[in-house]
Picture 1 (cartoon, helix red, strand yellow):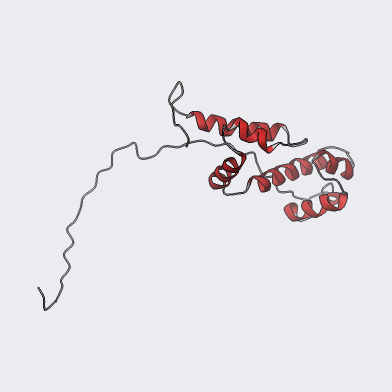
Picture 2 (cartoon, rainbow, N blue to C red; picture 1 turned 135 degrees about the vertical axis):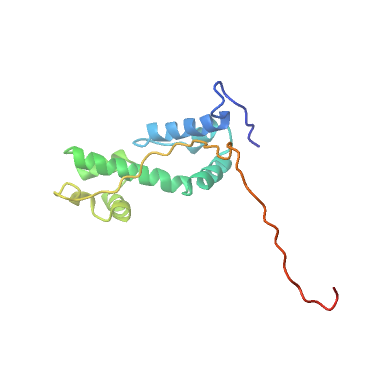
Length: 156
């Protein structure tokens, strides 16, 4: 169970900071190895519970989020540098150019080698951060109108 306690300023809660700390770890390691146990440790929960909370709050699985972020970063790197496709694939955790090309095509709708062609558009999946917005603080004026239903029943 998560303990909700206010931080100085009262706008955010501790568990939200911990979830964002776990996301910071993921973002810092997109081009390296991401250890799920470390992600969960930073969020102060089990890896099972972190994955469940993440997918519930983000509406995407953790694995899909990491894959999309890595492929977004890879596309930007291909677009802005002269790196070879195989080197970019290895940087973002793909062991073969075929698996990288397949995953890249699934996200961006084109092969990695086509990114550098003029006029090509890539999809970018932005970084996620969790925030809480509280609504309903303002008073609402309302009126209840009576509703009378005419019922014809032999028992009334």
